Length: 196
Length: 217
Image 1 (cartoon, rainbow over the protein chains, first blue to last red):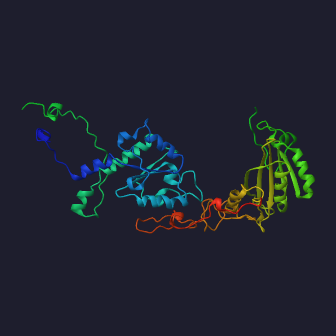
Image 2: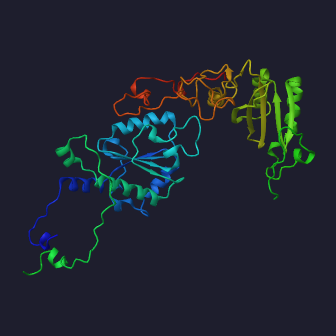
Image 3: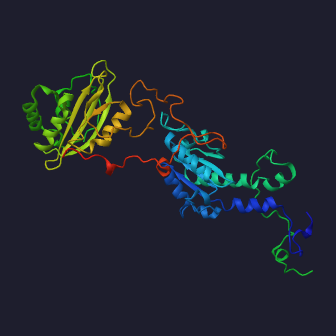
């Protein structure tokens, strides 16, 4: 890295993907598919104590047209599965899915004739949360995993250069920007108040 | 208060103390006057009177169940049908059982009625003419056990899809169900939906509860 990465030029260069993914990952709008007791924990996840507004996902959208993250919270019966699938089909791309809790992930304790043994039987689930029910922190962690996945998608550039059949890149851990000890970046340089 | 211990199974005869003592309940379930009135009125059709934990259970023959319910409602004041449901005893004779929990609100008394149905007939008279609230409970018992309640105005399945072919609470029904008996949604994005979840929004018109036929009274 050169010293003048931010120095005095007034612009920075990035990829379209990075900007798009930054915007998408910090404004995920969950579709709360609350089917059982997990939905109560999902309310705590959105409420002030755990405050998912810190992650930009406090706007629960009950219309599938406005949502891009479905949280399946609770056991899915065979009758309900068709409605869940219809709602999922109504959500606009790109969209992601969290299976919240043991029941949504595997059927859980409802090992019986009327309950689908895991909502991945009919939905492309991105993140599974264990627990019965999971704590709100676990839901936040799942949301952060979704954010990580969104940040590492190469939608625009991959489509432009390699076509739509390109393989998805391996997910990376989130890159957290922390002060690295590089003394060349100071608030004074960053905000352009330094002389010279 | 003593710890609740279960050392009685229906195979054993309850001892004197087990039959009459129930530290966990009040005397609302002990009503010998009503049992006496039933025995006087219906004689042989009151098949057995069972007392356990100070609770009376009256077994009546299924042909007289409507008359028994009407007698209890009109003569004895048991105006409130709390619950009704089926039981699969999985025995050779009289396999199914239907229970009726009744409450007399004025005297705070409870009574449990039971009637037994053999597997061959699988049918019994409906009590919806006496207690209109029994409608949905009888639909549930029909759905889960396949019991046919004769005289029920609208004996459709309560919970399972209408084209489901089994009765899932029967003992011989496998716990995880019959594979393929309930349709799953399609597993690929391109495939069409396999069942319309919002049938009413697309023109199907099931009967609303307020459109059901009125009871006899």
